Image (cartoon, rainbow, N blue to C red; front, side, top):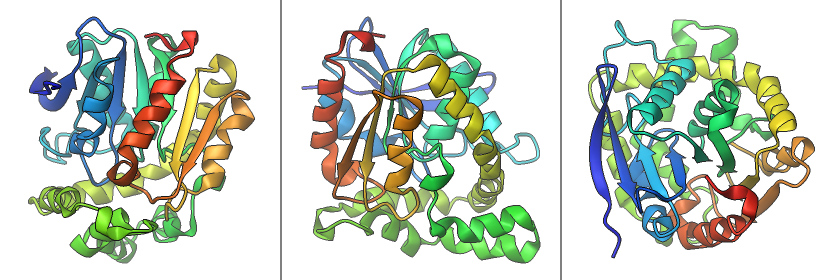
Length: 289
């Protein structure tokens, strides 16, 4: 049996909730979640890998059980998320680590890697994009807001926060939707319904354009540092296309790319398969943290 511990770290006055399992002296695997979920998305992956790693999965600020500071005192930008999680790793003693990044976790983790490449020993990207060709037409309403931050365009994005769309994100592209537990998206919808959470998420939609602007810098980091890299992708993702996974091989020639017949939240249906791919990947001697 795997013991998962549930803790909060004080990160410069912010309480950051995190899950942790595995031997304290094992190589570290830092799991970074995406929108609109939290560290609970890794509930099946953590026990499958905790014999090999010290697995740590924080909730980003404004998500899950972590603090959601007022927008008047905290800027909800991806630069700020990366800064908080970088400090989190320092507070809990993660000197070097492998990154597992998903969705919002990708620009968060890639920003951390840009600032401190010496800390990142390898990267696993599960539907975590860093290339323009990886962005689907599903981004069109958000791109419209980037071009014109009118009240009308901001309001149009509220549909992305509806309970129905959250559930759809989990089930779209899944050949057998009966495999999707409602627990995950129900919990996500609970967090999204908290007072002020909608404006937090709209702020992050607006700021996502800064991640796209950084894509060339992320790619330059990949070319220069060539971290051992695994892209494992739900190939039916409505937001991040398979072309975005293949593109990593353009900058890291020996990057491994694996596709799964599922959607955006690939861990909901393929946690065992993803864990097996990760275990095989870390047989390589270059992967130690």
